[in-house]
Structure formats: structure tokens, C-alpha cells
Length: 309
Ligand code: HSE
Image 1 (cartoon, rainbow, N blue to C red):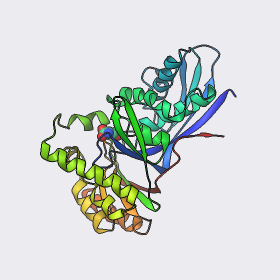
Image 2: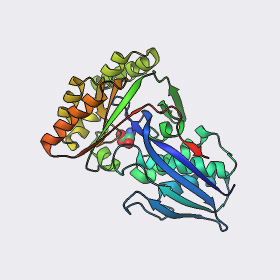
Image 3: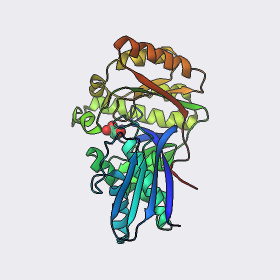
């Protein structure tokens, strides 16, 4: 085998109450990376499509190359590889675009090398790439993109990643307004400290969300989609945020929040029946403020990244 292609799905990080510790993968979209053996040492990004010419080719800046390099450093091997990236995800959207690229690259490179690592062991390498891409080595996009499903990062030091139960029929609608928000900018508006009161509210909701997933209690899932830590600051960067939230909840969504660092908004629903009403309700708000929006909907992806045979 001298070339491998892999797919990694888009993700919704934070899931409202779980800043940097919760995320899930979605079926609708993702990135594909092909990795080929190269005769000389070193990583070379050969082609990138679907990014409008905006992503860097330099190995030390490209998330695919950074992730693979971290893996090769751990192996202590100086192997050459060519990288071909096919972006399926919009940049700066909050749908885990940089994470999907890094994860697809790692899964492809790992297979090319004969799978020296188990899937979960690839996570720290993907986190190195996240740090380069957005200044923070958070795992709440890379972990669900790699592993699929709903994932909890119980701790970062040492990394403790827990897969959660995904109730049958849990459905996600994504609303991607036509503007970009860099994760680094969206993190810069956050505060360093959290009050005891807000910490209590946030912990209650994280616990409620996890319990709701395991108990398949959709109402509990919905009322746990509350974020008093990041959302109040980030909402100021996202036009129409509160209006869209009110409209989609009235249209039948269990709840709504910012997908990762935004500007995409996610809502969860039980089944697909309310999806079109949710999209129509959001569309009306975006029309009223003159902002274009793309809507996607999908079941929760439970497989995560995989090699394309
Ligand atoms: N947890 C990260 C953040 C996700 O909110 O900044 C970025 O997609």
C-alpha cells in the first residue's frame, strides 16, 4: 500500500454547556485527506482543494502536516509523505474544519504506516494541530471527529476521553450564516474567570446533558443546552443569535447553541419531523437581518473518521 485516503466528519464542539469538554460528530459533511509515500524524508502538502486557495502549504502551518509530524516525532521516524487535502468543510465556520483535516490526515497516515497507533492514541497529535490552527489545543472537535458520537473530555491532564451514549433519533440542524469567525477571535472575547454562581449553573447543565443522553430523555437534553460561560460573550459576535434561538425553539427544536466557536448555530431535535420548520424559522430571521445562511441537518455520526477503501 503506498497511498491511503481517509474521511473525517464535521463536529459540533461545546454543545452549549460543555466548553472545551463536549462535542459530537455529524453525518452531513467532512474532509478527505490522501497520504502517499514519498521517496525522500519530510512532509509535503501537494494539493488543497475546496479552500478557495486560503490554507497554507507550509508543513509547519498546515494542520494535516502538523498532525502527521507530531505522530512521526512520537514514532521517532523520519518518513516522507505527500499530503492531498480535499476540504468539504467551510473555513472559520465552527463546524470543526481544522479538526477534520488533521484527523483525516492522521487516520490515513496511520494506516499507511501499518496502524502503529490505535484510533484513540491519535488524539494528542490532532490536538497539536489544533493548537497551531487556532491557538488552543482543545480536543472537543478532534475527539468526536476521530471517534464519532458524543464525546466528553473529562480531563486534559492526563487526557481522559469518554464516549457517551447517543439516543436513537437525536437529530442536529446546523445553520451556517455567511460570514467567518476565527476560533482565536471567538476565544479572545471570553473571560478568564467564572463566578461560583455560573460554575454551579454550568455544572448542573453538563450533568443534565450527560444524564439526558444516557436516559434518552430528549426534554432533559433540551433544557440542558444552556451556556452561561461562553455564549453571552460570543453571541455578541453573531448577528441575530437570540432571535434565531427563540424562533427555532418555537419551531420545535429541543434547544439551540453556538456550534464550537461559531458562527454556525446548532439545534437538536427528536427525529427529523421538525427540521424543515426549524430551518424555515431561522431563515426568516436571517432574511430579516439580511444575512445569507446555509442549513444542513444530520443524524449524529457514531462512526467517526475512517479509511476510504
Ligand atoms: N471549544 C472550542 C471553543 C471549540 O469553543 O473555542 C472551537 O471549535
